Length: 305
Image (tube, rainbow, N blue to C red):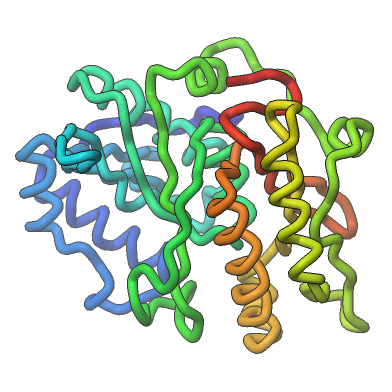
């Protein structure tokens, strides 16, 4: 990991103006889609956190979160809602996003809050790898078109379906991933050796783009029900997504929409049968592949809770 940057809690109007500019670079949108500096100042002055990563005098990344309430059975508890994480396009793949989230993890725990939630597009494999595999977030909530129609360059033309993830800051799975000792990673071969099924193995079309396979829906539902009632705890399935959904969207918007419909059905039904996203696998190479790991309960093949 390249650590040639400094992390700071952002507090001044000048800091927030830099966050404004960075948002324009990251989301390729106009001013209507940018959180303005005065609102960032209000968040930072009232229990929220705006943490920045600086390379000399250039802001190259930031993460934004604020306190919120969540309701369960008529009782309300405090959480943080993490709304944005952005890294300058010229400084990606250097560990900046992970470092920002780790700093957020530390600061929110100092506020005696143990839960952070955020949303992300489940078809964005790099975000999935960071959020699920590296940070240890989990997910069992899928929302269709959560933000409505967005106009920025990353979302325009597609419904904004989103995962809402849960990051339990004091859980063993999160502490293992964010601790100084690296967690041994399981790859696809481990899951296949354990006979974990890939429910949607994905072919490529003539131009090399991944195509969502036809799903035998009754057979898929049978897999979910059978593994749901299996006496063996922690029944696992693998669900494949494109490894570069943004490139796919730019090349073929219709195919990108097909992937949205395809995975919407798979995730919604898996969650309805008490499955939980617990890990993510990314295979690099000339033809990268990406897989979610879903399990019945917070259990993985390696027993990492």
